Length: 156
Picture 1 (cartoon, rainbow, N blue to C red):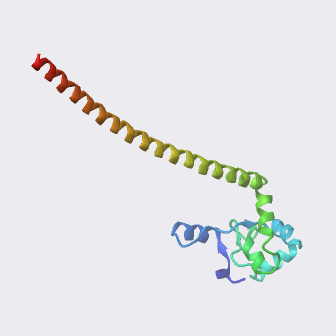
Picture 2: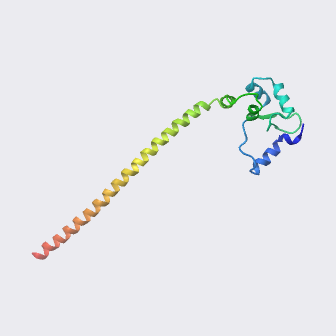
Picture 3: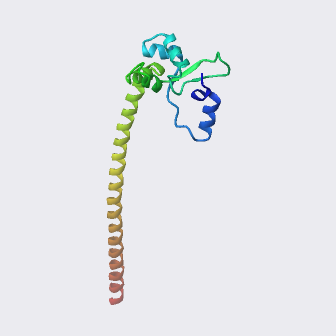
């Protein structure tokens, strides 16, 4: 098997640390790949040994280390279709549906809270403007009252 076709865990870590790799795709074990693709473990292993699953790597040192297979490689190889990604999400995290629902509810709540905040800020600006106007008016009234009282005390 050509060594260049297989990423080792060390080379993957180096790529990640050097910023050369994108976010790694979801990977599964040989048994999980076989279950997702509804085929035998041997079918997956044959593809691995023929380098037909790009990006697959052995998770450890030595020839007996377990394989990790990127799910996109299974799709590219025609072993399964894209719908397996949804199944994988639900398999890896049974809370996916609940969390997605909760995320949607939180987004809706956030939009509502933003609208309340914007409305409150508009109301504050209006009230602040009215308060400024009333302060000016009060200042003028007090100034007029003060000058009127001076006029009355000076004319008496």
